[in-house]
Image (tube, rainbow, N blue to C red; front, side, top):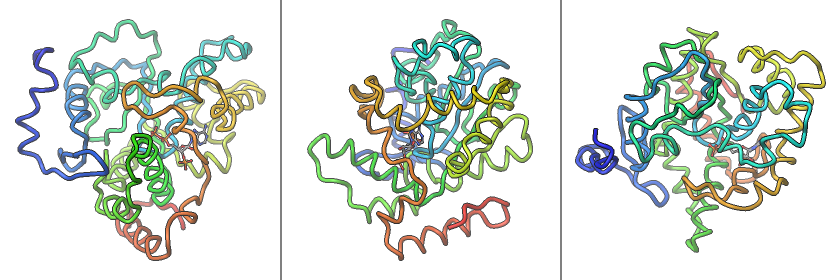
Amino acid sequence: MEYSSFPSAFSTLFGELPKETWCCSDLYNWEGFWYASSHLPAAMAARLNFQAKDTDVFLTSSMKTGTTWLKAIIPTIMNPIGCMNDDNNDPLLKRHPNELMPSLEFQLFKENPNPDLSYMPSPRLFRTHVPYPMLPESVKNSTCKIVYITRHPKDTFVSLWHFLNSLVTTHGNDPWPMNEAFDSFCRGVHAFGPFHDHVLSYWKESIKRPEKILFLRYEDMKKDPKVESRRMACFLGRPFEKEEEVDKVLWRCSLERLKNLEVNKHGADPWLGFEYKFYFRRGSVGDWKNNMNNEMKEKLDHITAMKFEGSGLGFGN
Ligand code: PAP
């Protein structure tokens, strides 16, 4: 595909795909998953053209499942030896976590279907919200590592609703009504949804290839961050040598610290338009209780139980 015709060349394709309105944008269904028009061409281009290296690390997730926490932790673990001792040299002081792990569909392939990534030092760190089937073949077939994080669907939904409304209300519009957002989420209509299918796509693959995909849950990270961070460091081939190292990583990447760093208090994500501060909210487990009524809880729990039945995957209540 010619650079000059990208991504406008997709306008014909969009006309043929199932379409739904989600909050204030249109989503298109491609091979069972929903994408915004600005992200589908980029995801398709990445799938076609991205060439993985065996040393690459991928952070994959559905939206609002704790990705930003790992966008901070993974680069900190993968930092060159020595950086850990020098707090003044912490990249998180100068850059929002979004910049430390660039996104395939939001950033790298958004304008150019075949970007030159040769400037990136090894090991290259990437993130993507696409489901497993949409990953570039070279990512699946190389020995590069994939860390997947998921979260309880009820908290994921509530976090997503707050996040979208942060943008909607910044532009002076009324918040997106909770009942409409909830209905969309339950039908699987949201960016990179359906949520449950997304989770299952990585869950099944992580069972087949545990050396390839590390499957993490936000709730486990919150409950025992040291254990989960040690697992992650071992998986990435950078095991912690001293207890102080895991303490340091967790301190550097803690919600309280990141939320209060100057770099994260001001400015906005140039690719999506969200203010950097909106990536850091409460970060609690069970926040759904402050936002959802019992009927909504029952409905989403029921969908989750049905979808995950027989998979060996569960989130509890
Ligand atoms: P993204 O999909 O836009 O990258 P993501 O980072 O996955 O968003 O999810 C944001 C959630 O992670 C927020 O949860 P909440 O809305 O329930 O509060 C955010 O607060 C939480 N979060 C961000 N950074 C951290 C962190 N360092 N530790 C724990 N939770 C965090």
